Image (cartoon, rainbow, N blue to C red):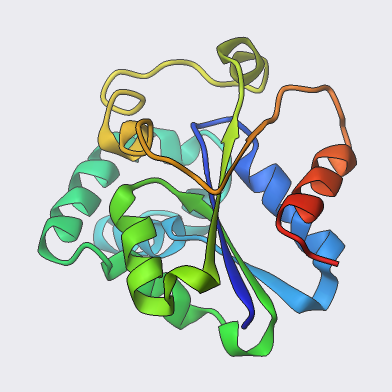
Length: 186
């Protein structure tokens, strides 16, 4: 593994979209790790929910999001790296050059990756989008979600790179070209 790219941003700013396009460009040299995956799996098992629906981007998980956030915050208070570690242990990270973590949401997520892999291995990318853009993508402000640390903890953080994702580039290729240049990936 050469680098770990930590991608963060608000809901509906395009984290998954950009991560998938970056993965496509890097082909078999990369994989995507999602910190939310072990959270959703544990929560689904705990409440006997549909795991596939919880892992999707559909409305099913939204009805459980707030309680899942509260529960995962309790787990993080005991062990801030619990879900980061679980996500990385589930992925075959030794088989690729690049790991794309598509859903970094907290300062302690970044802290865990830097402490575990070293700051030289970790690069952070913050995606931003205007509220109008996010609304056009289906975002609606939700009290207890959009005003919680899971959405706001990184608001005052600094990142290696910050990139606006507001353009109507359906393929995302222009943004991926910018990211590849910024991250110095050939």
